[in-house]
Image 1 (cartoon, rainbow, N blue to C red):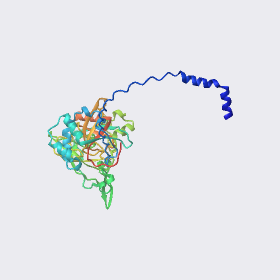
Image 2: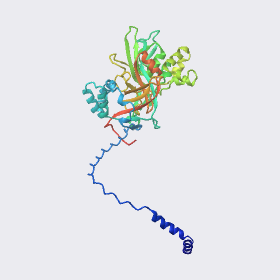
Image 3: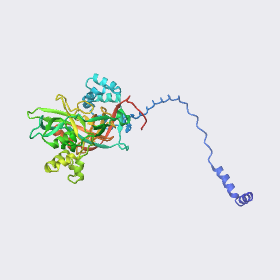
Length: 412
């Protein structure tokens, strides 16, 4: 290697000359400018306050994801005061629960707020959580329900011959959460045969009189399809021959799962998906009276009723308070606690027009299953029923829970 370098340098003396001349041609360095006059040091920038971490997930509701108020798309423009009466109605029950006492007590003492004051109240007391499905997706189905009016009688007649039963004496309900806390909101229903608990009668067995069913009717309806949909809605009114109304509400259920007869008609090719609304099913039944009984009994679930006071401003929901038209929804209580305010973002029935508003989770239903699933209460009568029957939209939900709600685990 050394001999190679000597040979290279002897052969290339001009490289050394070129290198030295390049250094000689570099321009002289300019004299440096006088140092600038020192300026007083700037005041130190205050350290920003740390952003508080998002809270932990409610123990019983692991599909809820903590978000900030800034994440809620329509909250700044929401007419929150319109939901205030429904919130106060729920507080008549919720105030007895420790997590809700502070907010409900303050709300009861406040004068009716305007929108700004109502929004400030909820921001002060509540933490928003985005509802998600068990697979993590954020969209779900939003349907509608209403309080129907049926023609009927307190006694059986030639026209009124379809009974509304009260809870039968032999229906046994077992609250599984009392034995298995992880099965909260699940109940087992049946009847005792000797020392064994067996499944209760299905709809087909009840309507045919099989298994010795001996229910006590509280009223009789004139139309079997109206009665079927009354069971789906959960509450309604019976118009009696003298023009007065008998109000009835959900009391219990036979323990069998709800099966959609609309979906069944679609599967059989009797209706298209867009025809499978409440009105579409009623029209089908009018055209196919001979097929109607088999269709109705395909849903094994059966609802029992109780008579309600006529002075209520709405039907009683599962929370035990009257529902408010346009501000109450039914939810799946396995995923969203009853009584919670919910921001619902969906669209009007069969329309792209937005339906975004603050509502209260005050009811449940046999067909309401899932973490992002709501049944929107439209109110009483035919106009409400027309909207409810067409409501089958996609939607998102944000749940508002008190800031000191029992918590466990972290999910961001």
